[in-house]
Amino acid sequence: MLLAERDRHAAEFADYFLRTEGYAVRIVFDPDLAAEILRDDPPNVLVVELLMSGGAGLALCRAAAGTVSVPVLAVSAVELRDQALAAGAEAFLVKPLDPLQFVSTVRDLIGTSAYLRRAEGRR
Image (cartoon, rainbow, N blue to C red; front, side):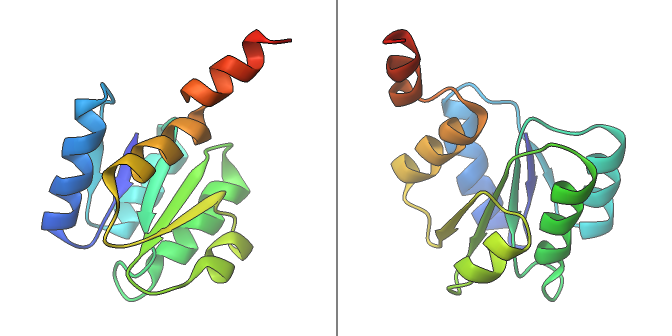
């Protein structure tokens, strides 16, 4: 999992909850490095802060949607849901993140939520 964030405290917060759930997380603070990782070693999901480096998060959403099949969770303290979805994000959450909602959304994006497993089991 790739976490592209602008704030170290927010990154530590997100990392803690994802690792608690057993996810391996790679944190980057540079949008160019995040784009390089997307291209060379695509993660199973991208969590991106839309306002990193002056709004480079939207460009990362577009890059993920345009070059690889990586589900994208966009986050921001500013309500940018429409812009995030238009740029290719599958989901958007407003900061500060609610830990349960955050982890559940990630699980939904990669298909490991309990809800999705129950629904598949009924088929």
